Image 1 (cartoon, rainbow, N blue to C red):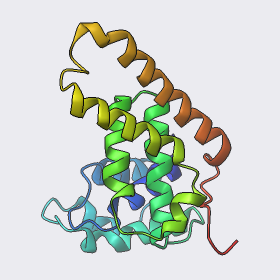
Image 2 (cartoon, rainbow, N blue to C red):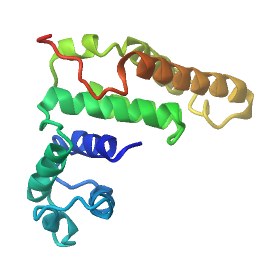
Image 3 (spheres, rainbow, N blue to C red):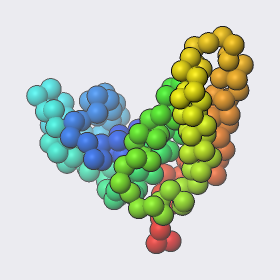
Length: 180
């Protein structure tokens, strides 16, 4: 993953949050190792800076350095969605954990309903409800060896669906917009 992608994803995760994500400092340090330095980075490197609003200027200049505009809320959500799909596809996170994070961070947050239709996430929403229903009726679904094959198949399906989504929508960093 490129530094630009990491920066976009960090910015996307920071929207709507008060606390600064834990991976901000290592990312800024990585930018500095690439000889990208701005005075605004000092606020991130200062360990006493716990709040996002103190670090937004650094994010703005770092994004501008790479020619990436500051996102609106919809673009930030797109970046979050792309990041989660990449993490699921590359199995950096457990597919069920990724699906849960997907639902918690994106689907339940107040947003323009058209966004969900535009980003083509119906397959994930359907899978979530199937998974959630299964856990309601079989609380040991993930841990009972009798269901191991079914769990493995469902996880593989999530990884495949995330990969299909990325093949169609990801990689370019261009959000799907209602006005285009």
